[in-house]
Amino acid sequence: MSEAIEASKLQPVTGWSWFVSGLGIGQICSWGALYYSFPLIAEAMGRDLGWSKSELYGAATLGLLLAAAASYPIGKAIDQGYGRIIMSAGSLVAGALFLAWSQVSALSIFFAIAAGLGALQAALLYEPAFAVIARRNVGGARGAITALTLWGGFASTVFVPLVQLLLDQYDWRGALIGLGLINLACAALYWLAIGIEKKGVTSSATASPAHDKDALREALSAPVFWMLALAFTAHAGAFTAFTFHLYALLLERGFSTQDIVFSMAVIGPAQVAGRIAMSVFARGASIRRIGSIVVLGFPIAFALLALAPTALAIVAAVAALYGASNGVLTIVRGLAVPEMITTQGYGAINGAMNTPATIAKALAPLAGAALWSTNQSYAPVLIAIMAGSLILSFGFWAAAWVSTRRQGGSRHAEL
Image (cartoon, rainbow, N blue to C red; front, side, top):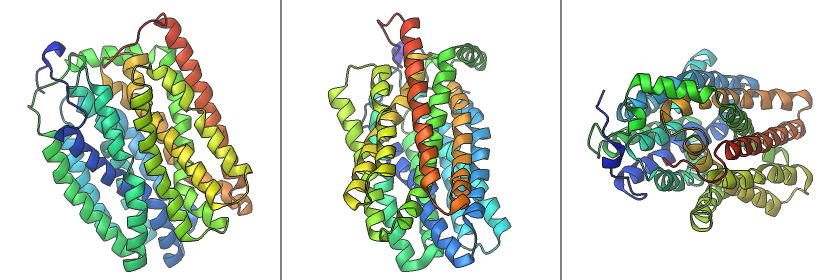
């Protein structure tokens, strides 16, 4: 493990450095392949092999449960300087699993592959990338994390049309081969991007395992930790259920695949637009205040989808509002720990907080499929998603209120 150096001697990573840009391009590929491609692949795969929604989403659930178990140890390992190895090797294994998936015809083998890909989300999506940035970027993490999420916001915009094109041209097996090759290339990208800076550059927040344990113990004793965990767990469940079932939900409502791909592709630019708006108009605002406002976007978007007439313009508006809200909340989630709890032991604390959220991600697709099967309708699924968005709002408001009182409302920590 590399030695820590004084935080004051660290040079903050600028938002558009090769380090952040390389991570950002990797995030487009990781989110696009590991997350946004699944509903499209599953729909085509289910039709071809005759597998049910419950079987397909049950495999996804298994994988995400493994990701929940891996979140804390991966966060702790990144605190200790293993981020480069974790993200590069994770992408390499993901590529191999996608290639293996393309040859699957047995449900048991599919479950094993889906389990592996789900577990790798703990090593390849935003949380490990945030921890990699936090470890070496004292004094500038807000800008770097914002820049990273600007890159990642294009994942659905790039990969939903790309996967649909691959499905149309080469069927689901050919699409999976393409995703496998992308992930193999992404492994090299992570290796080069994360390795650009000198080894051993870390913050005083990650000076020793004992220091991290003390920081985690203190965080777990703070009510704000549990309020944020509740809010982000509710968001994870609603987000995953919405993302995994939106394609099938819109098919059920009679939209064409072209209209659905267009609507889903709106989410990415809306996420980026929300993040740019935040960086321009809320540059000096606290994360508490930004989060307290943005969480309102979720229940409004889901209520509009549930109650408004079925029309492409309305669905696109829902996608835009949801995307903008989700884009900003991603940054809020990445910065809530240092502002509202502590700047110490970021990877371990964020990993611990992400564990219940990942469990919610794991259960949401299967729960959505089970709710749909009750009467072959997505109406109860939307009600459940709406409930999750309300829990998110109340949980975050409670955390913001308590942390403001604790900090006297006059200052906030900055990583």
